[in-house]
Length: 241
Image (tube, rainbow, N blue to C red; front, side, top):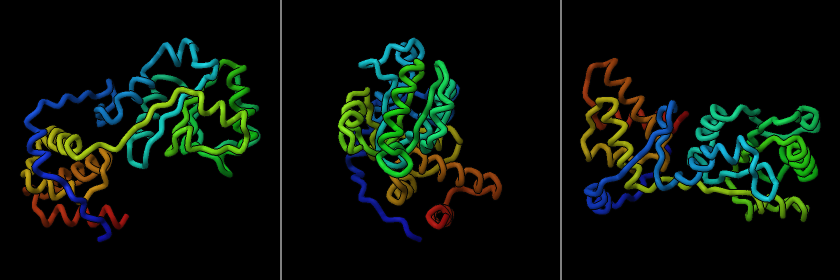
């Protein structure tokens, strides 16, 4: 067991849960919950005028979504790929410039200065995609202002593109989600057990989905209710893998 127990303010959750919290799921995309922590990023990828009509900011055909690990950037990019046909990349190599054709779109994941994204090549890549009237969605843990490319023109260009931050959900939103998701699964878990789970999970929707899915599978296969023992076994198994 290697998980750390987070301190959750149960009084705040109890008070906030009395308020109506509205969530939205993206059409045809199961398990992606839209809330205040990712709303602007969702609006960005759904903006067909920006992506399909080529009306870019400052003539640069790119936008960046940034946020910490577990915030849902990659999941959101999967939805983007469904809406906008594009090539997914985790690094740039010199032969990539040969693959840029008219109107081609790209996703660059884990985008930050370094060996996988070298400054000169990134600059040539952006210039070529711009010339060919394509587009680029950048995913990063860093905001544009936190990146140092050691190339003034590239620093300026990256910092001028449209950017949207995804934050980790707060405990109230995460609690609301775990209630909603477990109810959808018709899996009864008491409030005390839900808090027990949240105190031991990473603060992300993906973590909640994984644990509830595993509890649901275990409950169905063994025809038994959710117990603290089963929760602990599943949490321990997740942290070991």
